[in-house]
Picture 1: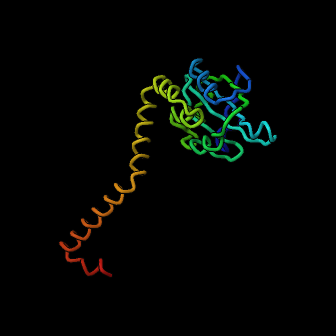
Picture 2: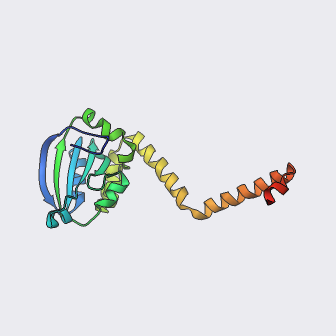
Picture 3: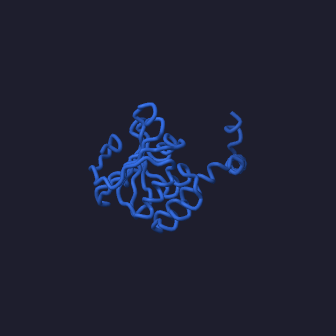
Length: 185
């Protein structure tokens, strides 16, 4: 299975194929079954209109690790945004050893935070909490770091405040060093 231009994963053993009304059903089943493998998800647009849209979600121990949309060649959060539409979905779930998924799981542009699929695709707080509880500690630490950075970058007032402090400090240093004329130019 081609996951991206750089990443290939071998075809796994098909363990389930069905149409579901909600992506949360697939995410919950993966979590309950501690799936290590991947799910190929085809949203209703592709089912009804015959278009080629589909996405691949990989899992380790039932916890989502990466996402890829082959039709747009986008990975990670961008891929989730591509197929965050209302169901039904055709879903095929494949099992694979963790070692076969390593290339996809190492590709930073494909990675998603463990709880992001439950939040964005299923909008299910209970599933988000269950996923967080099942997530290995080191992945939760990564998620917390990413979340803190995103929160900081979203705070425009705080960033502007830091910029203003930097400007004031630069002006004070320039005056201290006798470089105020160069700043005015």
